Figure 1 (tube, rainbow, N blue to C red):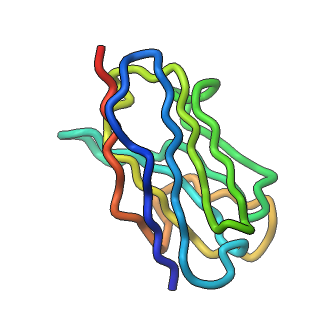
Figure 2: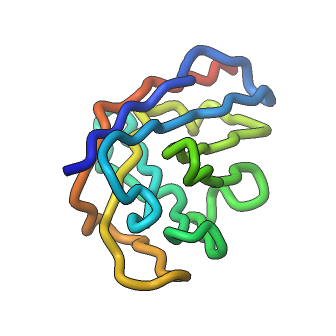
Figure 3: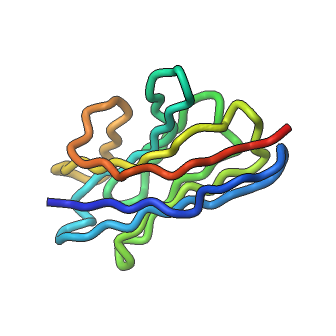
Length: 126
């Protein structure tokens, strides 16, 4: 069992930055691929970024490439999402998610995650 708690959301002006964090409890955090998703009002949940269990592989949805960076610290059982050059369309509730994987380098880019956090609100004003 893994419990995930996000933090770091808030209100920021367009062009600004935020860093989200997701702290995990439970054992074997380093066995889990991690992902960030977001859901804006009236829209479906959207995959944002993913990272392999060893941190060596990442990928991003096209709309955030070059602006967002996902990273992890397995010793601290935490995954991060650094968000730069924020735009009003980035406004959403951001969720982290975890999925057990059996090998390094594996990223889960779809919604097939086993554990989810409660979400943190990010609001970007124009």
